[in-house]
Length: 323
Image (cartoon, rainbow, N blue to C red; front, top):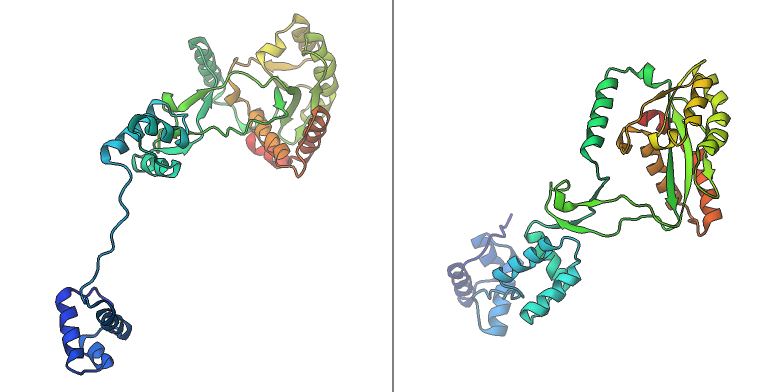
């Protein structure tokens, strides 16, 4: 089979010489073990341009110098939340040279920077971290049977304009958890509704919408504890462990008194430790289900209806898995 290796100038001259001697293109191609169309194009190029040597196509000249490439990378590192277009505008103001945002993106990729979503974190004090560590040490020997008797409950807020986290940052691969690439997230959107629910292995509560005001201690007893007490007693026996947020359970002493009077054991829950509660993963799944509906909610009433419907649709296997 004829080869298609690169033909240097010396080989080109030999091929042209054979053809000028009167040899056929087919015979020359067979003699040099080169494809027929390669020899044919070479001969045609000689007749039309008068040149047999290969013309090296000129590459497109780079719009930036290496020094300017470093400037683009440093600009993105100084403010990692800036966009490629903003970097291009800064470059134009500094060098009076216009480049496109695509050029900026290529230079940043060449410098090891990629557009990624920043990691969010809740600010923790030393006391928060100490309490969380102590709690984990006290419960690390619990078995699956122990956790099966726990009702994991919590409150969560869902906003009408969902947080799509569309703002990106420029960072290197493998640096997601560096301080400069993490964004603090300690505030909820103003337009939102609060819901409460509880999950456990082989069970869940209904989704309770906290309407018209804040969740006081008495409302917590009337709307949350008493309505769901009998349901989960039937599921796990006479007593079950109730796990909830400290801020909720300590609003008033009446809440703790209600738990004691009903014989409900409550695990002491360290504050600001949402990663310990598996229901946080369920809230995330619920939010994604609502955002992915064919007709996303457009007002408060449709948001409540969507949350309630999607909560009922969540498979129990998902709840069991996160627990």
